[in-house]
Length: 283
Image (tube, rainbow, N blue to C red; front, side):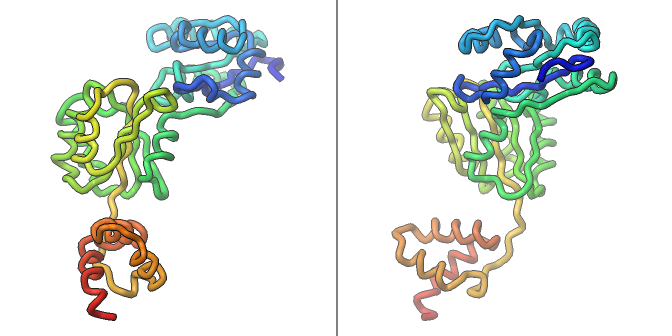
């Protein structure tokens, strides 16, 4: 499987926290290749030792890629196979691996993905803010003006946006983005995904800031921001009678019922609320 006329590069996803989140194929590849190109050999060595894998690790990162890439290409052309890994998750997502992949492909050598854990996808799936499309923007800009520009760019975009952010900057970044996005845009901050202290803070920007203030902000953070929707005023024709009947039997505040109907049927929340208030008089 790992012997080609030339070698092959395997882009291998590794766990993002819980060491059990690795595929059987990934373990097989890590055992079978000639060496592992690792962002941090100490991190990868710990993972390999956990599974009893003695494949050698070689450092490959932003600082040494220029000198290491020609060496790797030569070894691939000799018939050796390489596994490319990052410290956590899927390589090439905010790490330097794309340079190596491009060079390998430009030589006509094979590159094989070995899919698995991905922090942006994991955060997206548990955020409750994904509908159709999404955009991954890497790390948020550090400078205020650039961050405001990012917020302006996504202000009227319908797709969900996903970013990485530092625990030291997340609260300040949210305060700055609120200047553009306002108080109603919903988002989720997911911390320490798959780890012991995994936390999800979800709601409006104010809700999330309150949540973050209640506990120390530590560990890796993924920020998910819901897409923009152009709401229209609701009419009774937008709201199926069976849905209204079901909601009437559930003990929820009118504001929560209005929020649900607004999201479900793409209509303005305030106009739904007014309709719910008027319903008893219309029956």
